[in-house]
Image (cartoon, rainbow, N blue to C red; front, side):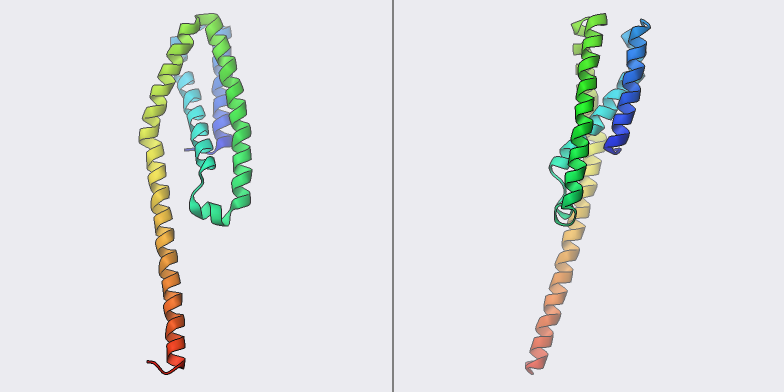
Length: 160
């Protein structure tokens, strides 16, 4: 997954390519790679938006202001993406008919599902592992500190 700024940059680049291809009269089948690039960038942006809505626990604890800043940035990028999507829908529906847009949306949904299964689950799994490791380390450190405190208190009272 890439960051939201890069994702919107890729989406904008692909969007401009699609618009110019439509205006020159290219067939939609000739724009497959560009549509794929746009769809992947939008999917990455949606994933970043989802992650910003539910950040990991350690980010909530130690980076609250960064979370708000990221969420606001992602929201702004998502608004740009929605505007691009609406304009693309109107262009494609105008030049190729509404069924072409429906077909693109279907292909995009299929690609998004495949991408989610491949990439996003791996990212979520890595984040879960990282959170568990941090939690276990915090538990061990806390237990060690408490054990040392109890030992010092017990030793000062002559109990051991």
